[in-house]
Image (cartoon, rainbow, N blue to C red; front, side, top):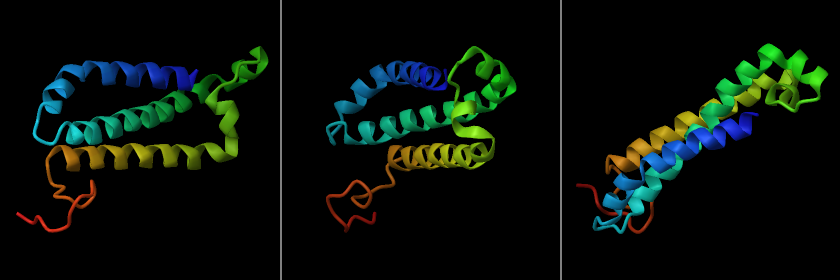
Length: 120
């Protein structure tokens, strides 16, 4: 149930930003900054939902096993969960930092490409 929750939670986040995205798309950059900001936020939301949903799923993994349900807790296993969740948490943090960096306008051609000289 983790991936379904991730997609629905992140979909509502993405749809709630549609009006601001439309406004941003009318900007001089044609919405490139909006796209480079919103997609990492969406990815970070999915990754973070996997973190908290898997932690929650571990509370009832024995019930999931008895009922034949496929949860992230059972899929990741007892040994691998911590490292996998660390990866998802890292993806969340890096995605959100990238979105903040781009959204604040600090990228002057470096990460998004298209030049290398704008310093001011």
